[in-house]
Image 1 (cartoon, rainbow, N blue to C red):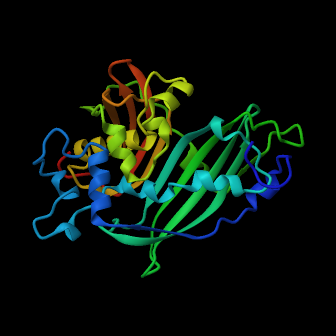
Image 2: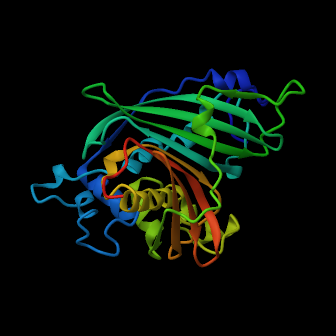
Length: 310
């Protein structure tokens, strides 16, 4: 069991925990490597809407950055959870359930980021506990807020800690951010199909998530998978790229916020089908794996405007 201090789950201790501030530094190379890791230019190396993420004729410092790159600022916070007093769980039963991202200004091609993290939610679901961690990221030099990540972590086997008959539930975020829209029954506004590469997880892991579940066949086998699986945040990157292509006319800075719920694993080499529905300035999406006809990811993306090309 992981956890610090007493062996009893103490929700009040958990929600009052303060994470130390941390720095995240990245270069243009990191931004370009991330873009390739989520499939940019994989099918067309001269795609005029995606080449900007990996190359600029005036120099690498002018490349554009995909909004989901912001998710990398939240890497490492699950390992910090072992320092949270009053939190008792088995790290092997931890699942990354949801990711919510708000973009406040376009991400620079390189930077030094100051991360300030806090506990944003804790919920007793009976057999499991859900812990929400919120990370606000600032440009260190200017102090300007760049983005916010909120992760929902499912801790299987850690529920049942409520002291009263009412299940414990604490949240500091507005409910409209965590509420997930139903997938419409109507025909999608747009559908985008893309095959991932057999080595996709090996490329994506170079962006900082070195969990061996995504690279080591033995570890994947112990976890119940026939081979290493793709990172959930890589699948989210594919989905948002599809939305930028099909709905935003290639303009990534139209995206204000991104929400994704991870439903099922993806094996590298499988084909992802992203279905998109427009509801005002909100794109509701669902990603399916073509080979197994299973939904693996769903959520929404909020835009600041609609593309004139629609």
